[in-house]
View (cartoon, rainbow, N blue to C red):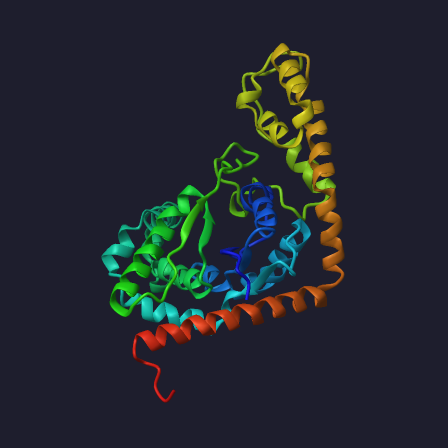
Length: 337
């Protein structure tokens, strides 16, 4: 048995992963797997809470997300990549934990409140159609975290309230039934969320403003050429402010060695937007080339990806089964054993 501390992290398979995911979490996961035992959850059950009418979308993206993980350097010999729905113990733990949380507490969760508000803004009155599954998302997440005895959960600030709710559930369970569950610590991401090409603070498929890890060079170039620039710059030789230009923003991510020169030329009016975008597109393509190369390998070896998922899921199920056994013993519902 490993004496390493345990990390639980993951993503909902609602689409391919983009550079926001890469800089926000994937890079860090590759580093963390060297020091910790890492479980990486492909959260298809949670994806169904607001994609229940489109299960094919979720199913298709399970494999795609797994390929993105492997392409970015997640090592299946160091990290356990698994599929949430293949671990029935998680659903059973969710049911038990649901008795420890009131509906009013769930509705007060800041993350849930924000997402309900977003639904209403997007869908009008239909935004009121919040399902039991959606409202219970924090309970399901608590089951995911505790099932694998996670000591650490890396999240962004917007997800911190969800982990705080997990900690509340753990404390309440342990106070009632004894010290059974591990209370996780939050590892806040130090990386700011990557903005979309349109300047939106959120990058996402529904907004059409993302560069995906699977994008071809042609797709990346096309997207970069449409990126929002400083609107005060009218002519090619006009000075501009790279701080308010999305091309300048992305140069800060992908053109580190050239950034000072790029910014200086931009401010002096010595840099046209078209050439600046072409340079950025090339730098992004060069940066993502190793990932795209690995991705092509896994796309041509889907059976290998499936085997990695099966092995990771097998390991995850073994661990979750042991946790569930301890939980049921503590709750005195381990009949006939």
